[in-house]
Image 1 (spheres, one colour):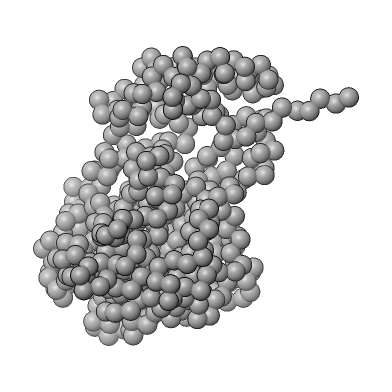
Image 2 (image 1 turned 60 degrees about the vertical axis):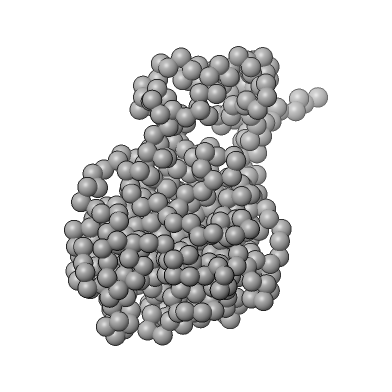
Length: 464
C-alpha cells in the first residue's frame, strides 16, 4: 500500500485569532500546485502604461504569423521578452468620441465617451465610466493592500494643461458614482516614501499593519507545529528558517535595510534634484517655454519610477498601478535623443516627422522592456511577478498626422489569468472596449460589457 504524499497549496496561510495570518515560504510539498498554477488561474496584478502620441504604424506592426511574429524597428527592443508579449493589432478606439487627443485619453482605460456637460470642463475632466485600473483595484486591492492603487507620471501636464489636471492628461477615473478624475503622483521622493517609508522593520514610519503582526507567532505556533510534523525534512528546515525570520522581525533584530519579504527590495532613491516634477506649471500652450534641465532627467526619473512601481507590487503595497509617460500634449524635449523640439511638434505641429516619431517610439519600447524585465526578475515563489500580472500598453491615437484611432498600437504582457503570449493577434475593426472587458475577465470578473455598451460587443476570442 502506498502512502499518499502530503500536498499543500502555495496560497496556504496559517491563521490565528481574528484576521491575523502569516504566509508560508515555497515548500517542496507545494510543487504540484506550483506546476499547475505557474500561471495563476486569475491575474493577481494589473499595470497600465500610457505612451503619448500614437506611433508610426508601419514601423510598429509586425510581419510574419501569429505565433512567429517578426518585429519591426519600433518593437525590436522588446525582442528579449517576445514570449511574454501579445501584440493586439487592428483595433479601433470607437468610444473616443470628441476632441482628437482628449477623447482618446479619456477612452483609453474607461471605454467611455468624453464626459457629459455636467461632468466635463477644462478644470474637471469627466468620463461616463470608471477606468479599468480602478475597477480592478476595487476587486483585488482596495481594502486589502495599504494602497488601493498607484498612479504615477513622468513629465506630466505639459502644454495647454499648464501643470493641472485636464482632459488632455486625465487617465484614471474613480470607481465611484461620480467617476471623478484622479491626478497622478509626480514627485519621485514622495512616491518612494509613500511606498517604502513604512515597510522596513525598525523604521520610525513603520505602519500599523506591520505593528499589528507583532507576536503573531503566539497565535499560530500550534498550527505551525502541526504542519511541520506533516512535511518532509527539507520543508521542515524551510519552515523553521521562516519561523526564525518572523521572530527576528518581531524582536527588532533584523537590520533596518532587511526587507520583510525576499521579493521586497525597495530601490535606491537616487538624486532627482535636477528634475522639476511640477515643471508643467510654467508651461505655455505651444511648448515654446522649455525646461531642458528637467527634460534631460526624464530617462533616469522614468527608470526610478518603474523601479518603484515594480517593487510597490512586489512589496505588496498595492496590486494595481499605472504609469503615464507625459500626457497627450507631450510638450517636452528629448535631449538624450538629440531631438530639441517637443513630441507634439514632431507629430503634427511642425508637420509629421516620421523619423523623429519613430525614434521616440523606439525609446519608449526600450523603457517598456526595462519595466517588463524588472517584473520578470522578481521571484514570487516558483513564478515571476510578470507571470501573475497583466500589463496593458496603449496610447490615445494611432496615426499622429491625422489623429486617427484605427489600428491602435495596443500590447499586453504577462501571463496573469492564463493570457497566452508570444503572439501577434489581429482584430480588424474591433472596438477596443472588447479588449478592456477581456482584460477585466482575466481578473475573474465575468461581465461581458465594459464602458459605453454601444461600443462593446463582448470579450475577444483567442486571448487565453
